Length: 392
Image (tube, rainbow, N blue to C red):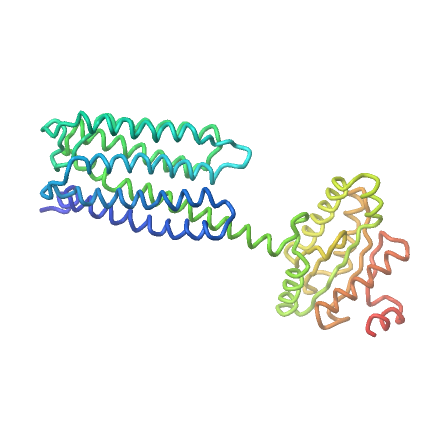
């Protein structure tokens, strides 16, 4: 017996079903974690309930691989029924997961497809005749109506992805499943198991399909984790680091580099802007200033939001002069936005802790604010009386 003969026999189906079940177990673990961790309980519950249906269906396929067991014909229909229903439900789930909230994925078309599956399966069971015309060489039954209906369902769902801007990887998985259906139909009704590569396709394309679904789900989990992490370290409006994480980044930079500078910016007359032009306009200006801070500190440090209209940057002293960076920020804000900023700068020469540096940069910014605004002040250049007042 050659390897090809061995794989195209019952052993090929056993290997295929075993591999698919292993992939489904991993997917079930992820879906359970999603169900317990996120608010969208309904869709994750549906995913968690659907995956075991696929597992049962593949277990039944493995049982049916050996014709000598003489299993009842209705078990063959159950296997095909589970396959189609599970396929419809899981594709509904993935379409809900991967489409934006504005896209309306209607439940009714999927319910109709599921209902038609049961109707066709019932009709097929009533007219089923265990004769040589309906039994395949391996002992499995073929169901013309259900087999071609499965192909139609796959095609309809594939067409449906065009109108909802689905992920290209999801469309690729549907194409894989469509090719799988075609190979099964061609093998069952045209070649009757005589073409080895078609038999191998029907056995091993399910592994490819479920691996594609696994990767889609894994990608979804990673995206959710990244979003959760980002929301915990960044400010929702500006996208800059929040105060706590900015302090952490600054401390890390201070440990790695020989010197650190903190640049403290406060938007001038921001309250007046809020009162005269509204919160929407003010928020837009705040985002513009934040983007300038982010661009100016990119590659040499990090930027954060201290609170309100107060923004921060921490930069390394190894490659740049902090007063030049601060002046570049002030100048760009004046030229590119409708506001100005008062800026204060402190360096690790003035203090030994990040919290102390932030306080000193804040004091220098306040000096800029009270002596004309739209200017840069260095803490090292402040009058001695102000430095002493801060230290007491």
